[in-house]
Length: 94
Image (cartoon, rainbow, N blue to C red; front, top):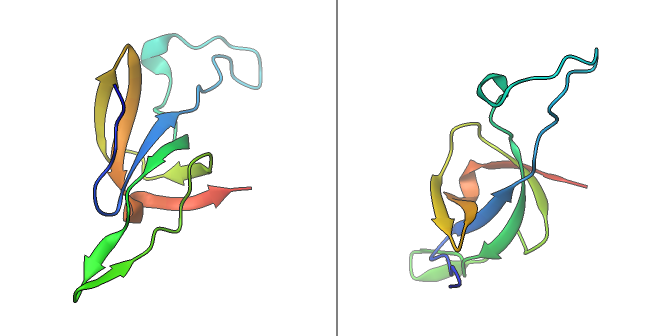
């Protein structure tokens, strides 16, 4: 199954976070913070405002920093994805 986002939405896959702290302490799954860095997997066509299409600034493959609790989490074919609006993306990681 393939996910095709609508309007100004993007589909991202979260990048796994470290399981140990800098000092070497191993964190259990319940103690880890939700990661904020994700990879863009699919991009919608853009939003329409006053009848004009506003193109997306993101593209597939971009690594992004997103708002901590933004978007809707979905599971497709055993993979977890988050669907969010482009406005919930804070920055592109280069």
